[in-house]
Image (tube, rainbow, N blue to C red; front, top):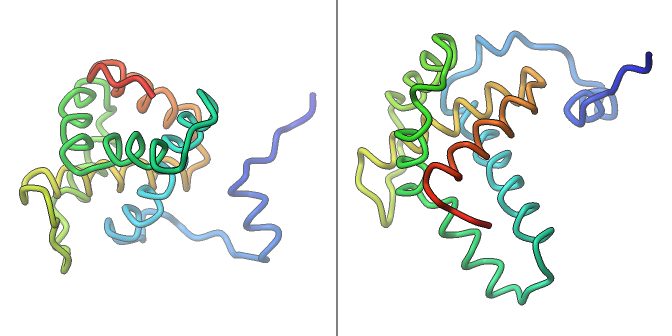
Length: 146
């Protein structure tokens, strides 16, 4: 049986990166990568649905990735999280960030940071299926169609 190599593993191989215990990463570092992971999923789903103008693509993407939507997303999927995932989310949510949201409440911004930290954590563990499952379920529960 052939083993599939993840995109992250290919990145590590290409750039000769060492394995690091992800439990040592700060929650804001996890959120940094998780933000990109979520954004890529949303962008890929939108682009695969239809060839639209960049303005239309940006509008759809922005609605799905804004802090208010991410906060609602977390409220919708909290019951689905494992104990470990919940702990990672809470670490991200409670992290002290130097930046502030332009168009979101502090509560929504922190929940969004927690969500991004969780997705970053799962990504760095090569748990793409879990990420996709959570994102799909969260968007479905919010009634968001990309």
